Every structure is written in structure tokens, then in C-alpha cells.
Length: 494
Image 1: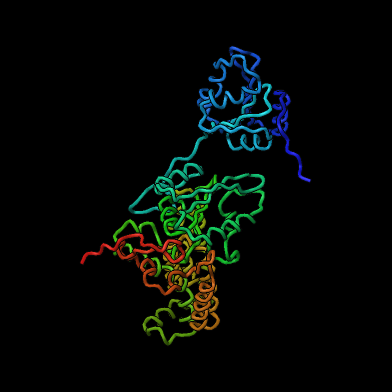
Image 2: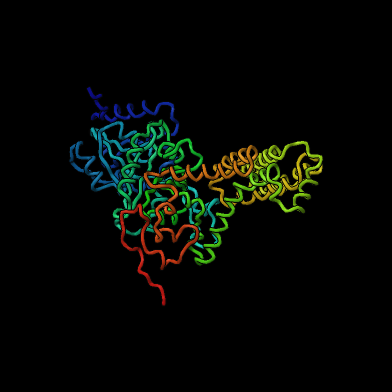
């Protein structure tokens, strides 16, 4: 049998006691009592949460109009309707008698207005709290293009998205996540462009979300991802409105969450780790060079330690004689095997990088650079490691910074390749790379292969893969979009 919902009565004092009892111990709940100046029998009580209501708006749009309005000879039951239709200036007014809905409105920042003799209350939109100013995301800076980034306000973020997609096809569906936090979220997509199967699958996975809290989108990301134990993400994330708008135009779905500037996007392809907003704001020639450099950096960051260890330990005949002699001289007196050298120095480098991230910006970068120089020089002088290993680790670390968004997966794969190369040389390295390729080929994000469009064998969709083709050459939507129509007329000049 369903539990009966608690509702308001006609007694104002009893109603206020019920609300206060539910918020017992919460010092931020404000109960504001006032009455009509012409008729003192019209008693009112407004509940709201301190610092979540704009006081000027509350006083001018709610209290003052009610105090000054001549109600005349109306019944008590009509007061609520008169206030809702004729008095209050709030842009959003709802009426209910369910206490649960009133409590939820209060914690969301609305004002709940009760009137004596009425068994219903009004929910008024008087939200007004301080928010962080709009600034460019630190991790997604561009040389050219918009300087806006999302902040922690859901409504502000949705507004920034709406400014870029001024079309009725943009759909926004609100949802609530977390039984205790009641965090408001929003699913955004373009009707007619989005893959309906992806949208349905996302909604199905979100319906299974049953945590008591959702303080960040990572809570949702780990629930809806395709490979929860994989270091390679199948759910994208960004803090830039222009990036979200571009992904929606390609048929993807975006998931916003109040309280965080990060937005999730699905499906997420592996090539997106190497794409930057700069690629689409700069000339396609220079953008392509930058993307190729990021791809080369990814390969070097993964492979340099493993290839060096394999050559030194197993395949000296491949190395030029002068280089082999130089490496042999540098390793004289070093007590550690090459593989342990690499593991030690890579671990130290990652510790220094993590320390630099956690420290204040003013000293973080200096600490990382000075620490790396001092420790590297001291280790070589003490004959703990060889100078070539310092160079190898330096190349590995610097190239890894080109793709910071995938650094976690790179670190894990790098160590796996290093261990395989230390066991059976280049054969182990190649075996590891083939295993990585097969693993990626079997991965998907909401039914879309993560190696798309490479795995689709469609030339049109590979024009934004390793290089970025001119806009007049990219005239169709991705294959997972429900809109096969051309997105641009081919205006190529002869």
C-alpha cells in the first residue's frame, strides 16, 4: 500500500511547525512572518534558505506587494490565487499542498509562501546566490577562439550553450541525481541529429543510477561508461561551451550537472584525445601539423622507454656502433639494470609532476623544473642512473604533456610495454602494441567503436582524423548521427 503524502492544513501555525520540524538543526532556514497592512488578519510566512535568495528581489517582488495590496472582502481560500495571479512579481509561481515538494523547493533556493486559512502554498522563484565568473578553462586554453568556460551554475552553463545553438532542435531534459543531494542535471541533444539509440541507451543507464549523492559528473561517468575497469575513457568531458556545441552538432549527447563546470559527452572516440579546439579555429594546414605532433607525442610517450630498454638489453646490433659505445660508457658503474633505471626515474618524474600540480601556481612549475634538474643531475653524478636514461625519461615526460587528458592511460600502458620489452625485447614491445590495438578495436562507446572513424573505412569520415581537412571538404555528419544530410555545401574553388 502506498504511503500517504503529508499535506498542509488550513492552520498556518501548524504548517510552519511541520516545516521547521523537518529542518530542525539547520540554522540556514529563515522563516519570515509578515501581514497585510490593511487587514492584519491576513498572516503570511515565507520560508527560504539563507544566502540562496536574492534579498532585494524577495522584498520588492514578494513582501512589499502583499503588504500593500487591498484584498478587500475575500475568503481566505482566495488569498493564494490572488497573490499568485495579481500580486507577486516572481517570474515563476507554482502552487502545491504537498510538504515534500515544498521542502525540495526550499533546498533548491526557492521561496515557499504560506497564508493563514489556506491549505496550499506558493513556490516562488527568488534564487540569487554568488557564482564564479566566467573564465577560460585552465586545462583547455586555446591560442585563438572563445575564452569562455563553464562554471558551477547549471543555468548559466545551459545559457552559454543556448547562445551557441539558437535552434528549436536543441532539447534540454532535466533530471535529478542522488537520493540525498538531489543534484539537478540536464541531458542536451539536437533533435533530428542525435543518434536515437545512443540517447535511449544513455537514459537507460542513468535510470539505473542509484547513489545517495552526485557531487560531480565523475560519479555519473563511472556508472554509464562502457568499460568501467579500462584506463581508456569511453565518456568524454570538457569545460568549453563551444566544444559541447560542436559535439551536439555531430550527433552526440551532453550531460550537465549542477555544481561542476565539467560536462560529459557521449559517444566518445579515441581520436578525440588528440583533437583541440585550436584545430578548428586555426588554418587547417597549421591545425593538421599540431594534431600530427600530438599523435607523435603519444607514440613517443608510450614507446621511448620500452624501445630503449629493448635495444640496450636485447638488440645491440641494431644500434649504430658510436651510439652503442656511448651508451655502454655511460652505463659503466651503474648498479641498476636498465629496466629498473627506467622504472625508478619515471616514477620520480610522475611524483614531481603531481607535486607541481598540487602546489600553488606561483611555485608549482618552478618546483617541477628545478626538482627534475637537480634530481636528474644528482642521480647521474652519484652513478645511480645513466645519462641516456635521463634523456629517455625527459623525452617521455615532455611528450606526455602534449596529451594531458589521457595521461592516466598512457602511464599504465607505458609501464606494461616497458615490462614486456624487458622480458623479450622488441618482440615483447610489438606484442604489447598489437594487444593494445586489438583491445581498442573491441572497445565501444554507447555502441560506437572507439576507433571510429578509422574502423569504418569511409574516406569522407576520415577527413578529420590524423589531419584536419578544409571545411569545404568535410561536408557530411559522422556515421553515428541520425542526420545523413550535408552539413555544408561544397564550395571548393576550381
